Length: 163
Image (cartoon, rainbow, N blue to C red; front, side, top):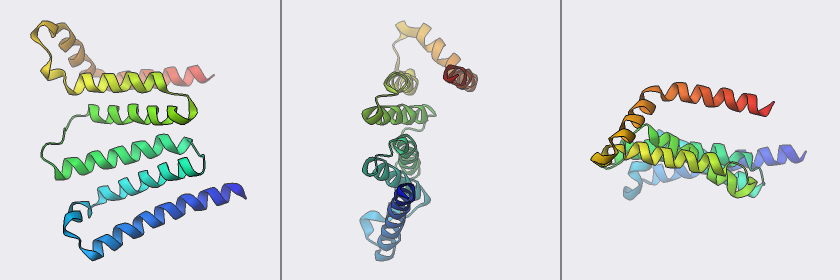
C-alpha cells in the first residue's frame, strides 16, 4: 500500500508539472516563450523524479531524474541559445553529475561521478590544450573515436562486478 502511495506521489508531481506547463503556455507570458517546447517536458519529468526521490526517500529516482533533467536542459539550450556547447561529452558530464547527486544520499557513486565529470570536461575543452600536451590530445582523439567500445567494456565490467 505504501508503494502505491509513493507511485501516486510521482504521478502527482508529473501531473502538476505538466499542468503548470500548459497553464503558462495558455497565459502566453512573453519571457517564457522559449519554454513552450518538448524539451520542457523532459525538464518537468526530471524535476518530478528528483522531487519525488527526495520527498519519498526513493533515492534511486535521483539518478534517473538528474539524467532526464540534464538532457532536457541540454537539448533546450541547444535549441534556443547560440552560445550553448554542442559536444557529445556533455552527456558524459550529465551522467557524472547524476552519480554525484546519487552519492549525496546513498554514498555510492562518488568515484565514477568525479571520473566522468573530469573526463567530460577534458574532452569538451580538449581543443584548447596547450601545444606541449599534444600527447594528451592524441589520447583524447583515440577516446573520441572508440568511446562506444569503452562504454561496452565498462558495461561488461559492471555486470561481472555485481556477481
